[in-house]
Image (tube, rainbow, N blue to C red; front, top):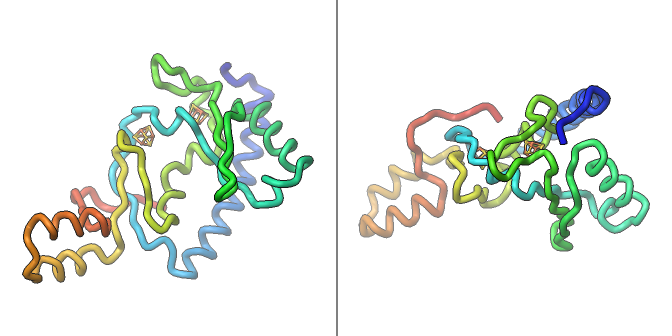
Length: 181
Ligand code: SF4
Ligand code: SF4
């Protein structure tokens, strides 16, 4: 259901807090040399990432009933995320988004979408191996891709093996330049 003005105002405030938290956290990670991947590509609007949004939470939120209830209630009432399932490993909640229209594959409240939707898929760059949806037009490139590519091209490995390694090591670059993270 499309957001009314009350939800839009609440989400605007929540977005500000989210941006501050994210900015501080990413600054700290940058100081530690992360991420080592750069984001490339663009959004083609396939809607795959809206089918089942997921969120990793701190262990306490996952395990403590009261915190868990507050967290899930907030996302249900404010963001329209209906709890679907969970993954104990990594403390991940999976949702169904009530704003996502399966037919048109569009968000009915795009202007007031939560911070995590706006940030997607940047968070993937902080994984050991970024995993994008098959349909997604974004991809990750290792920050030292060029040097690694050159080193690989100078080896005696077969072209097939080199191609396989380039894919596995995130060295393939379609030349569309890095995006802001
Ligand atoms: S999966 Fe990727 S291309 Fe598709 S809507 Fe999401 S960000 Fe855009
Ligand atoms: S709020 Fe909108 S952008 Fe976010 S998951 Fe739902 S449909 Fe997608």
